[in-house]
Length: 228
Image (cartoon, rainbow, N blue to C red; front, side, top):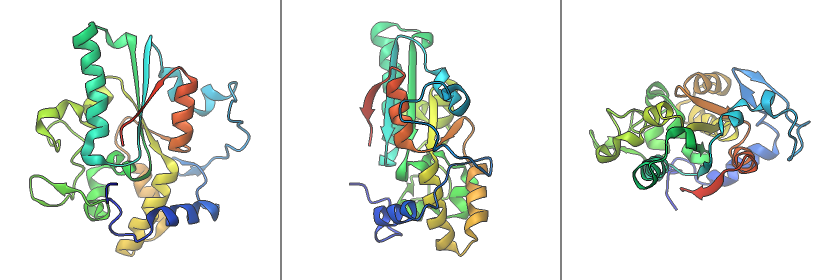
């Protein structure tokens, strides 16, 4: 198990406690939205509630499920799937759909450099910047230019987005870890939450929960790959 939770002694227990307290309503653009009326197999409201699902097309569809940062390997595995489908089978992008769901501690991969710097995410998630050899104050997985693993720079978030990968960030994880970060630096929780929402990388869709997105993607024809 990766130890991205160094700053919190019982991270999963803390996450579950907040969940039980009912503090994790879905937030998008700063507005709370109720999704309780959607059954697990609801199909009619999908286009309105989760338009990212409508982007899943093509013959070959795969969901990559990331619960941990895992040194950026969730991104690398997504890149390799695209790359080898091209090199081995000469498949075009139109024939492929890749969905990368970043949930629990992997939510940090979705955040901007500004959020990483202000809220000391390198310390919270135990991520070292290979350039400084210190806790990262930038998102070392965000761009090809600054990617943590230079030989696999094409796996960076910006490049995956440009290649059509559907990027989903877990709202429940964002709410939990934004609260952890707020407590760490003594910031207001509500303000921190809004800054994290605004600080999502371009192309990331905030979904009600990562586990919901994993299920919806499979219902839309994706095969499953655990990249934790």
